[in-house]
Length: 290
Ligand SMILES: O=C(O)CCC(=O)C(=O)O
Image 1: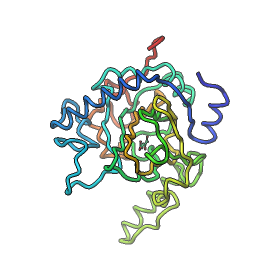
Image 2: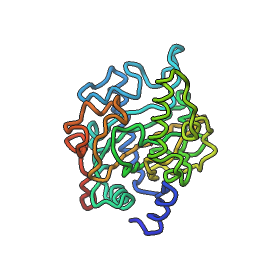
Image 3: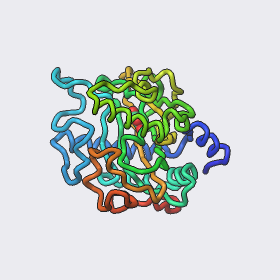
Image 4: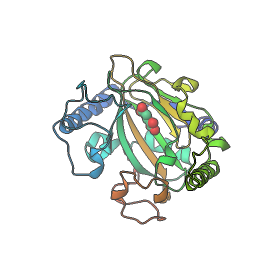
C-alpha cells in the first residue's frame, strides 16, 4: 500500500503523488453522485446540514454566466459523505485511509471534513497559495488531505501545485504564525498597518512557482496541512473536479480562536480544548474490499 520511501518523501516534501486508487467505474459513480447534489443545489438546496449551503451558488444552474455573478475561484460542496453513499465509502477506503494513517504515523484517523472542489470551465480562477491549517479551528497540524482527481488534471485545467518542503520551513510554522498574529494585534492597537510577512506574501505568488501534480481521474495525491499549495485557473473547456478528504490523527483538539467563524463549528458537540469527535467527524473504519 505504501513504502517507507513514500513515507519519507512525504515527511521531507509535505506532499506525495500517490497514484491510482479508483477504477473508471468508481470514478463514474462519484461523478453521477456529484451531478445529483448539483441538481439539488441548483434547485434551491438541501439545508439538512448547516455546511451544505457553503461554497457554491444556489438556485441557479451551475453553468450560468449571468453578468452580475462574479466568477468564483472554485466551487465547493462540503461534506459529500453525508449526502451520497459513494462518497461516504471513500472515507473508509482501505488504501486512502491506510495511507493517511501511515503519513500521520497514527493508528487511527478521523475525518475533519470532505468536499468536492471543482473549477468549472469559465467560472473559476487562481486559488492562491495558502496553508490549510491556519484556516481551521484545530490545535495541532497532524492533519493530511487526500486530493482525489475525478477528472484528468494538468496545469491547464487547474491541477494542484505544491511548494515542496514548505510544511517544515520555520518561516511558515506555528511560532512564526503566532509572532505574525502578535505583530498584527500590536499594529492594530497602535492604529498602523502591520508589515506583511513572507508567509502572507506567498498569496501573491503565481501557482507556477510550485510543483504541478498531474493526475489521471481516479488517482490521488496527499498534502500536509502546513504545506503551501495553490491551483491555477482552469483555462480549458474541460471539467476539473476533485474529491478532497481531510483526515486528522485521532486526538486532534478543538481550538476555536484559530478560526472562530469556521462553518463547521456549529456541528461541534465537544467544547473548546477537547478532542474533536462526534457524529460529523467519524473515525475511518476500513473494511476488507470496502
Ligand atoms: O482543489 C482545489 O482547487 C484547491 C484544493 C485545496 O486547496 C485543498 O485541497 O486544500
